Amino acid sequence: MLHEPLIVAEIRELDPEDGWTRFEATGRACVVCPCGLNTDFIDKAEAAQQYRDHAQASPTRAAVRHHPETAEASSVMHDMLGEITRD
Ligand SMILES: [Zn+2]
Image (cartoon, rainbow, N blue to C red; front, side, top):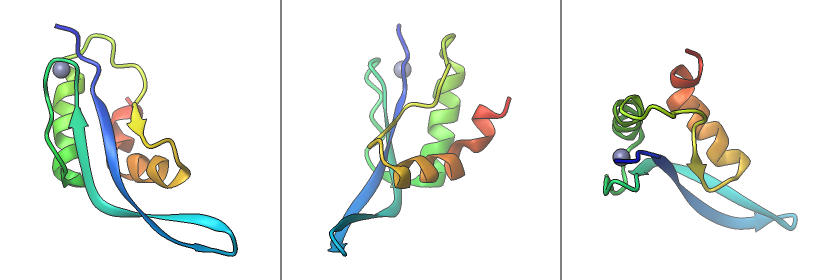
């Protein structure tokens, strides 16, 4: 079975400020994988653990994949999953 886990940060869109779209992380995330895994939105610490466990089952765990591709989501992922990418 192919495992390509994707972690999805739950991001809330806030009212624009000075014409800039703003986002806020809700503190929850979801892990999905083509094998059928779908954790639904859960606490980000729990999601990070699920992602970590699942990524270790994958022989091709290269980069952390996340969505959406925003700076906010990226920083949330870094906080959540930084230790995965350091090894
Ligand atoms: Zn999988």
